[in-house]
Image 1 (cartoon, rainbow, N blue to C red):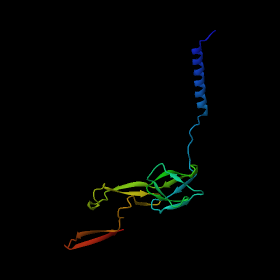
Image 2: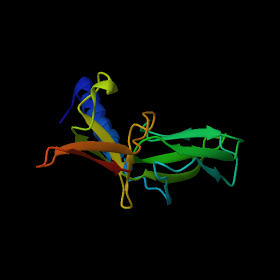
Image 3: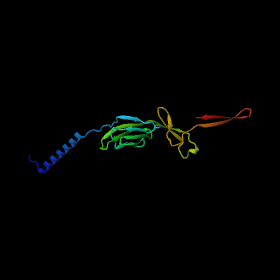
Image 4: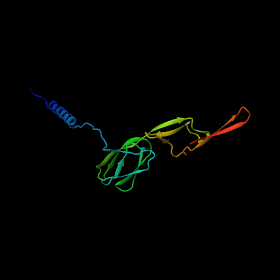
Length: 172
């Protein structure tokens, strides 16, 4: 049996292609879940928390912005300030690009909206106030707004004899 040269080379090329594809499939590694080693909890009303790394850190990657702010103090000391509730995995890298540490930052709480508390003086805002609640209590979600203080309610009643009585109640 004689095989023409072009057919022979096509057969060899097809075999080489199959070998390359099968080698790539064998060498391909499955993705693995990236997990953090520690979890740091920063309550919403807490001040910044300062952390020191064992080695110098050139870059800190936070894949989801807006949960925590990071401010470098030195190449090893960083301050973490909570911004809003949520969880994010933070990765710290050395100047050579190697991973120094990976950890979770958890800012606990969930937003609760209470309707009917806004007044005309609050301006063009929704008819609710937002609170961030955790296991131990709730606080204003819009911390830049003035915090509610005490208020007084005066109610005037007419007695059967015609006199008026005003009763004032203080709420704190």
